[in-house]
Length: 407
Image (cartoon, rainbow, N blue to C red; front, side, top):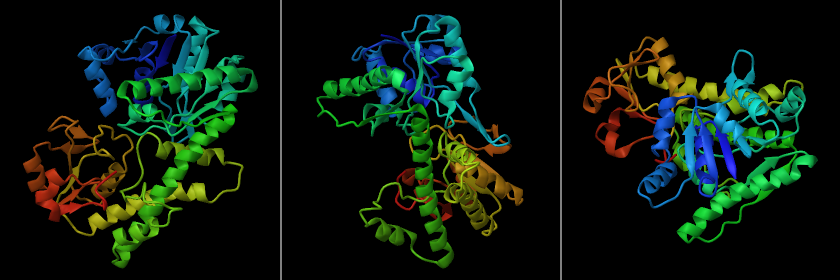
């Protein structure tokens, strides 16, 4: 099958690689330099499995039928299936997802290949699929939410917790076909690696319910992050051992010991925008918890900021803008709001971030990538995740809530 994937971020690129094991895949980007890199099997994002697949492809050890282009007409017109994985940023002023990139992909498809099946993989508001069907007078479009972690996107496509596809009754066969495509990609790697076949649950639902599944799933994760962060805030204020409390709470099998490591707040591609979008969808629906989890994240970041300001440092160093280890993404990372609060209090802030140019500015903050110079300049070092080999010698300077030394 000839498959076109619009977008080469975590979602689009991981899907393109997954499907290119068995199909002819064309990925679309608007950046020629990124297309050149991808056509040489060089990943523009940090993802261990994508990098492994590309390394093996370059060595002739793995076949990936994947090309990347900036030529939209060529990519859309030849496709037998179009997957839309373009970004949808949240507009904090208008309180809505900016779905313009998704609509651009839909319009390009309708212009050059109007009858081909389109699958939206971008995160969208509840009711969006039905709204674009009405807007464009079409029914050849379905929705499938993604459940991927940053820097582990291909791994999560190869080992999915579940596959959800949203389609109306007249598109159920298309939904089943797409679910089988995703399943086929995971099974291909299993067979290649000699692994036991996974039991992967598949759920076919109406598109609006599938959209709600995505937003409610991510909001639940945000609730869990906010819960353990507020537990940690309480423990700090009361002088208690946060790790011991969390350990005891999580011994209850109904709670479990996963996703319980405190942080400076939730951030990234998904949780901030998805929780706010879900809250916006509650406009005419009674609620307390959804609004609370959005507010809790700001409260946590303010508490972390106040804790640092109270130390009265001359200079605060921020070790990495990323939220997770082995990641190069720091979009909407919680530490950025903490930095702004500290600077607003009149305390200079410097950043150690190897993905940025040494001596450059990031949102008016100076980047100092000489590690020893960074350590010497900083009175307090903020580290959302504690890197023992790098920061172990200045541990007394480090402020972190990474209690369990893991993401």
